[in-house]
Length: 170
Ligand SMILES: Cc1cc2nc3c(=O)[nH]c(=O)nc-3n(C[C@H](O)[C@H](O)[C@H](O)COP(=O)(O)O)c2cc1C
Image (tube, rainbow, N blue to C red; front, side, top):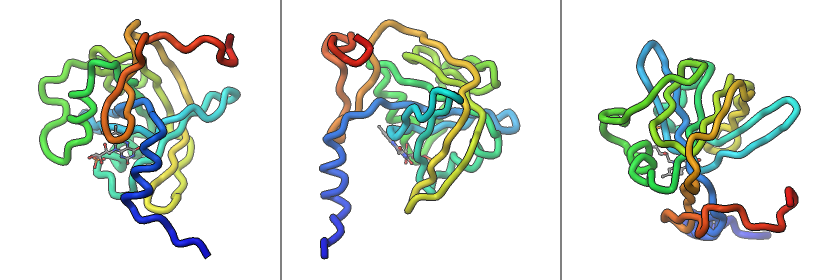
């Protein structure tokens, strides 16, 4: 019988996998909502689906789910402040933040690396998180800088900002 890992060990070991950082935003009854997410991933090419895992305790997710459409803002390497702001428990996350509306009407934050507009597909519970899948309806790249990277509980950036050569895409 294996003992389940304690929370600290789970976080520390899983923290060795670097992730990008996105802010998932939506407009619900004219009010902007958003939260920082590191568990974002592409899911399917045909149909085009993405997914991420918000905690069941998230205070923002119910409003975003109710909106039924949202925008995934891929943060740029110089946007650590936005990551911290959209993960903070207190404060108006959009105060002083410049943003425009995506085709779906969701906030695209100024200076993001890329954005992905989505319509909600399915929400499934896994442990203490939801898995959210969504269909991509519009998307674009905004900046030529590198993306923000989260690694071992801190922020990192790609050294060159360029993909390493020799990947499957050549
Ligand atoms: C880099 C980074 C990645 C995060 N990834 C996730 C995630 O994948 N899922 C999640 O539920 N929270 C994640 N969080 C934490 C949420 O942003 C944080 O709990 C936030 O306060 C939730 O706000 P809400 O209660 O308004 O939804 C992450 C935070 C940071 C800084």
